[in-house]
Length: 124
Image (cartoon, rainbow, N blue to C red; front, side, top):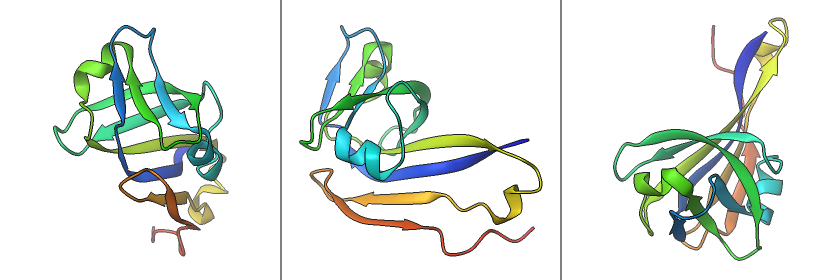
């Protein structure tokens, strides 16, 4: 088994940070659906503004462009920061070479502007 990138929400903007929440990242329900991310699924968040990387779980937010960093991770981001949200899956070794992740591109308001599968697998 291999752990492979399943989906990526590229260049989302943090709309809110909430230090006092128990934890997680709140993601607009439409973005979660587009990226095939389920509530409570583990995700990795990469902050392009400060280089921070953290692992948390997703919770469903309103269809409003909401991206809220919650709990202790709120110290790793600020409103307006640009982030990448990654999800992963386990793939059998024989299926991994042809596996293609789903990419979700958003605008400055976190509305989906394009969704596609990578067009080709990376060469081995």
